[in-house]
Every structure is written in structure tokens, then in C-alpha cells.
Length: 236
Image (cartoon, one colour):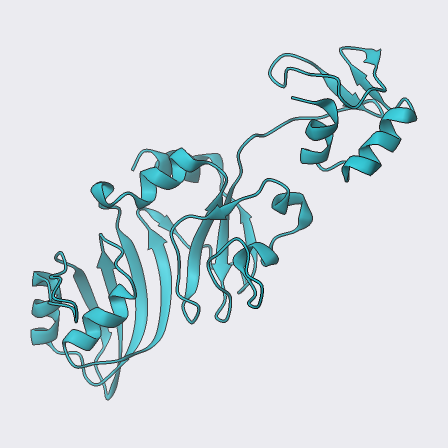
């Protein structure tokens, strides 16, 4: 990897700012001062220091975001705010992307990474990774509704969903439920409830597989996954 690219990716500024550091003699590779931006370094073997502080290169990042409403699950958009816009420049420079998606009006757990294998391991339809949502829906959700959803319902395009797991938290004129599904069709949760004559008013994703949303994260906040969280997810 080029030295200027490595320094830029590890938070030492733009290419222009990095070149200034190099000209100042602030960068060493294996103890030798290097001023050429195009110098190639081996990120696994070479010891790179900036102003006597060793830098550590991480090729991949894994972030947990508490997605707010009004933000789209995309990397860029000319008119709408994206989940990438919520990240600091430090993390944006890794060019992460959302793992799957949440609708614009849905909040909760969303993962972001630049690791395509990690994303595929969670989102591939063949993996059947569980996603859990909490929702507020119109009408009283009944035991009959629970049985319908847990056996699979026919959506508006004729597709029959795989069995889901439904917990009725409360059943009033407006009900609160928890739903776990193992697939990710377009607007699936909303369409599943529409199939039984109900409308989703509020929707929040709380879990992906065995990973729970960190409730300490306020809407719009994020943090890196811990090593333990990453390991459990990658083994899904």
C-alpha cells in the first residue's frame, strides 16, 4: 500500500495534509525517515510511526448504528440524508456500507462495514439469519393472528412468508408486538401485518441473530462492534 494512502486511512488527514507531514520528516518506516508519498509499505510487517507514535492499520470496520427515522440505508444520495452521513470522517474514509437495509421510517439496529464477506454471511437468503423487530400496530393482535404469522402468510405479490415468531407484548386497540423473521423481503414486516388486516405504525429492529442493539446508543449514534460481538455474528 502507498504510504500516503495508509496515513490517510488511519486518520492523519487528507492526501495534502499527509504530504505535509512527510515533508516535515515526521514519518518513519522501520526507523527510517520517509518523505516520499508513493513509498510502498507492507501493513503486516513494516513499522510505521508518525511523530514517534506507531500507527495501526485496520482494513475493515464493523459498526453498530441506532438508525433514526428519516435517514435512508444507502451510501450516498443527492437529496436525502444517508446513514453514512451520520458517521465521522474518521469512519467514512473506510467507505463502509449498510449491511442490509432498514426503511426510511424504521429505526433501530443497523450494521455498517466495508467487509463484503461479513455482509454476505449475514444477508445471504441461504443463511436464514434471524432479525427481530418491535412494532406498534393498529388493532388488537389476537392468538389467531399469531398462528397465521407463525405459519406464514401470503403477501400482496403472492409470496408466502417463512414461519415467523411472534410475541404479543400487549393487545389493545393499538397493539405492541415482537416479531422475528428469517428473511428480508421488501417492507416485509409491514406487508405481513397488512396481510392480516393491520397496519404497522412504528417499527424498530432490536436484534440481528444474537446481537442486540446497544440501548445506550441514542438515535443516530454508533460504535464499533466488540471483538466478542463480531465473533458471534461471523459464526452465524
